[in-house]
Length: 299
Image 1: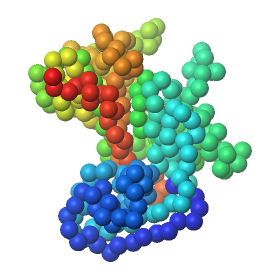
Image 2: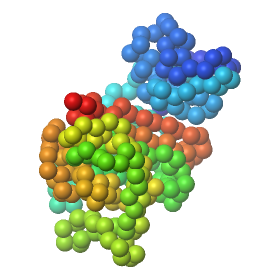
Image 3: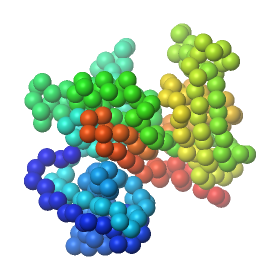
């Protein structure tokens, strides 16, 4: 969270059921709507002690809301990312497609999110400050990516990831029209050591993977799918969507035949987890890319 003097506004309870953003517009009626949205998006709103960033979060009568008014927002450390949430233990960014999580072994000179964020925390915390890898996103996948700022936070997250991550949702543009609006894909996954391509197999020596999908909208060419991972395997979504005959648009490696917006159409839009140190629930969400929605509009 941004440092500096902060004015804390507390309210004992919500008097009427309402969507969080609508409630904030009324409560902060002296602020512009853009500023209110920024306050919410920056993780400055707590509901019942939990950070919430969802615009459509449903407030109930009796909920306690705390708003932290930060006088100066942090600037993005790089055009390929923005800081979504930060405190003493973790930092979460919204990464753009095309940026690697870590350095590529054969091309260490290529920019990566780890290096950019590491340099960013050193500016505020000094040369001894550093970040630690917790999980990764493919280079061409955009969305929410978390780093730890202490080895303690990293160890807790890495050893208890499945327990601490309460919700991790992606959205993707799939090629073709889906016949089933919801479904589950299960398989064992293995990686070809020569091509580094992951594939499904019946061999139980592989890593078992489960992907749930739900179609949000579609037309004859493309389907916008929300994807919920029960397991977090490498390239899991890409392989499973290819397995059902609807690869991700722009994903040539796993069978995509079109590239409508010159990027792989996969975005990690929601991350809800238990904070490794404070044990508070952190609920972060980014908007679904407009280009994804436009591709899948009914025509």
